[in-house]
Image (tube, rainbow, N blue to C red):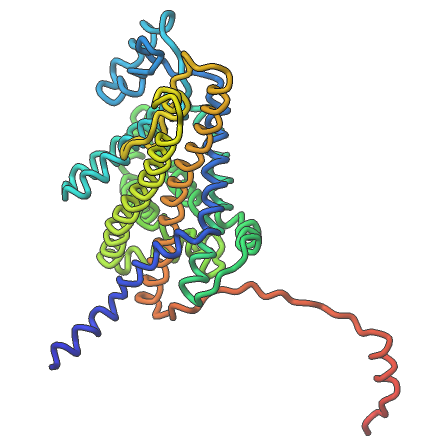
Length: 429
């Protein structure tokens, strides 16, 4: 009997079942609308910037891209520069965003397949390949990368802050704030949402600059080596600080936005809370994150299957009603598959009405695909908001329903009636 009583207490202390509320919060229409608008703005920005086609690509007979410089970089980075030089004249060009989008989508689905096959090393391999692709953008398309990163940071700071705020209120108090209210909160805290993920990078650069200066001093003949040897202890301490900040920034990044949404924290308070929770209870943080990752993968599979089933039923029903066989419908809509819910139509033999209809259908299908991607964004920040609340409860012993509420102070001036009442009242002796 004592063991049966102790078991619920253990689960109550872990609180991990509350992470399963993430799906219900993530599919709330307000979160999906905000995420949909954010993903749409980011994608439109990337596609507009792709008009300056700078990526070397090789296309097949039907005009489909079969190889890009990113694939060369992933297999053998040392051959990329020679590949670009040799293919400069007779090669096609494509955009940076579309290239990275296709690659990231492939790595994402591979990581999910590895996760369900319990191939954990495969998951990390796909994640590592994605970050390797990001280094390709930084090294060979730096200007594009900086401009796009600024746009993405601004859009995501507003959208992600609003999603975290809605998730925090819904989880803590079962309140559902209005769409404008959540966006107003994120815009009021815009500086904190933007600077929170950037501040650790600034700290790392600031500390690393002193190590860089010591390296420059080492170039001085005779005296430089001696000075570098004397101050090497300080350099090692600075390196340790960089390591601490780097680990805290990577592991605690998920908690920075929820810290602002939950506690109204400024930049440095959000970083301090994220670092303290990660280093105080690292195994608990890993445990919560792993549960959220597995649960999120299951929820994504369900959402994607639901989307495929919706499109498949619609496509099959249209086939029953369209006269003239499948050829006419295929020209407008090729049909979905479980791995590819959106496919560009073949308009080579289509007339003008079929072309217009195909474009309309394709745009609608793109909107559906963006909505699926919006769910991923909404679930990510909803789950991490709950994880932040659980970590805060465990480390700081703060109640789950304790949440920051902006106070609006209304200053009222005395009216003429109030003044007359004060004059009419006799002064107390």
